[in-house]
Length: 436
Image 1: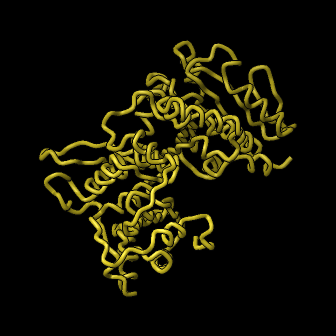
Image 2: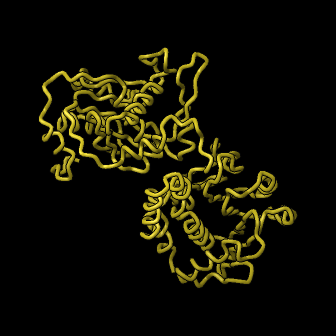
Image 3: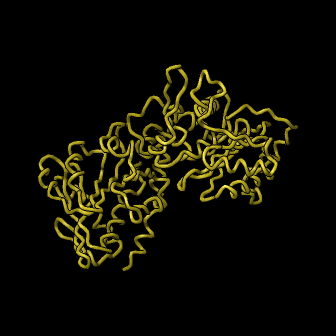
């Protein structure tokens, strides 16, 4: 049997397990993300391609039943992999000679762990339970050139040892990826229904069990999940306010260019683009202007965003486009450290308003809006942690959230008579003639 069938069962988010070279591959998130299945399938593929010694490790393993041995056996049977021989306490590939072994990391096994110098890949399952002592012994033991350590975990607390040691501030040799049930195209429908029920009944449990947030969440978040969740609830909002667009432009290959379209108390939708160059982004923006006639577009001018701004200005849109630098001086610089803190706080005020507001129901948007920690500088001004820190924790850039907060960059006063509300609302209906 070819590996194509197994590879097809691995979601795109797990592709780096097979295609990238990192010393540490750290995957975390909530239930239903498919981490264990993807790790097992990926290792079975690798073991068919070349001879490997693969150690499957846990903090405590009193018997083989406590390990991922059973899961690997089930995947071998599922794919009818006849080249794998299942032994009492190991799994061997008859053709390549790949061997899977299973061990615990508790104190009584320390000397056995020290003997694993020839391991090619170490898979640590339930990484949230690994102690710092165990890690300090294991890390230098897996020393073979090109060796990798794969970690799968559902976070328990803010100070989980492996999270603090590896994922909170990853280096260039560490891949950190967050994956939840909605990222997994193979998540069973039953699990999705359980997640939705938990979301309605106990949102704190939902955040921990299904979104992988630690139990002891930080109390210094700028935006609380509760206000974002309230904005997700469907409402009949008809606004006569002008249409504003926030445009966050990709700076790196894995970032997205995102348009956010907001009209008063209703954020209608987001448009995400990937792998667009500056000219293509400018072209797309020009189409937005033509089709939706916003009164203002606030564009992130950092990085390549300046190039998009220059192109749009050269095309005659100077009065419509405003270039915003997140790190520039705030309008109310006595209250905010920089423009970024000011825009994010304006967005928080919008979400916390006594008036009903509407956001598109998007779990990734919730993650991003609730990801930013706040503090205060020596002058008492609001200061947010850096975007790089947020990106490390999320496993991606908060592009949706940044596009949204850009719509609060400046107060907007409508300069022309308002268009009829029906004509605006129709643009965002499902029958919008394929404009998007």
